[in-house]
Amino acid sequence: MDQVMFIQTGTGTDVHGQNITKASIRAVKNAIHSNSMPGIRLSLPNQSLDEMKIHVKLALPTDDKLDEEEVKQAIPYGQVTLEKTQGGMLTSSRIFLEDKEDKNDMMYIVNAAVEVGY
Image 1 (tube, rainbow, N blue to C red):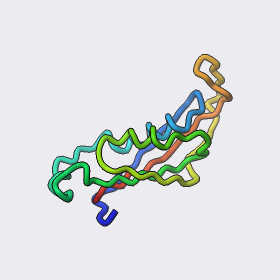
Image 2: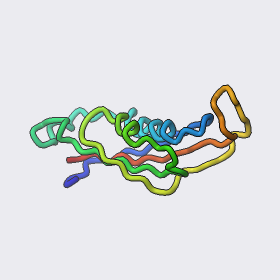
Image 3: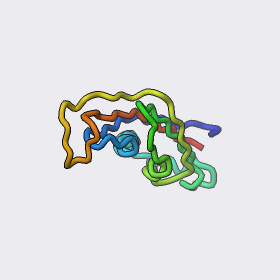
């Protein structure tokens, strides 16, 4: 990415089921879903959303079974790259719910930084 235009941040949690992909998608959506970028197209090469580059950084407490392609699909436009780093949090939900596919009582919390540019 030659020019970063802005960075959005978000947090996502999977309270039950210990699904790191679900928590990651929620973090990405939290980062991007409260923003509007009406002038972005005019700033991009060829004024095309296909020219937009998005770099997603995820701070993960574990990347066991992370489906990177599914996380990338949470971004509706542009060329998406993904970077993983150690971070986030594992903490107890203090309840085990078998009907929610819990394997234990842990919550997975992921932080995301979504860089947008060209």
